[in-house]
Length: 265
Image (cartoon, rainbow, N blue to C red; front, top):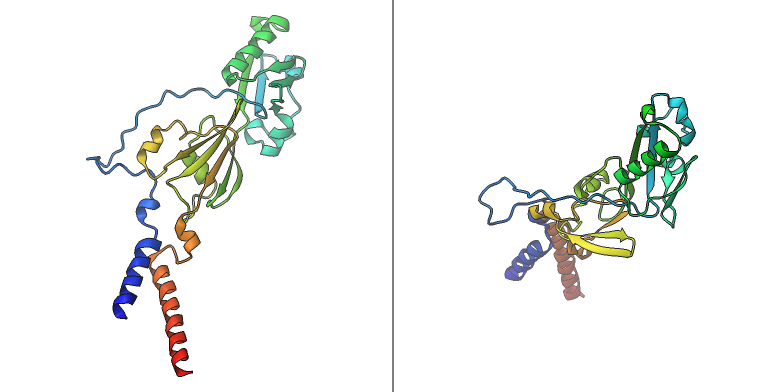
């Protein structure tokens, strides 16, 4: 009986506990002789604008009154850099289903498939050709109104998140959403990415340092990230050794009590 109990405890501990290797991000490979991680720099491709993206466009000149007519109405007391997602939704330029945005005075501009820098050049060229001379010193800034993503599953704060920067990694998105829970599978994080032809699905192992070399390590606007649960969560035996032992001891005590009661009846 003691051997059976010991084997049951040992088996449960080996199968139900979550090891540090499943919880630690970006671990170097076993063959690596150094603790330092060598990462080859990827030739990053600029993001190309898609439908439903929101752009922030700011036009400046020596005489700012001359370009006020091209600006959307701003909420009083708040700047573009401090605007909330709601403010950007109403005051930004949303790319419609045809890939167009509507800019005051300039009208409809097609931006589908363009980079933000190409859109900037396009607007500057049209302004100089139709409305201003070079001496006006037109200065145009075009940015994505934040990197919007959605994350669900075993995450601290699931839902939609926004990162106000030009580039962001999946690690930053996860940190911004409260980190992956203990029962989250860091080895198979799913990314659903939108393209003009539809959606594509990828998987990335965040416990492997080589993940930083993956083209999917950097998120793109409208990415959908899913963190799947580990098997230990469905087993319900606990995620640490102490929790597993407590669960098993409770089960053994219950079985022993039932056996004793059955013999006395």
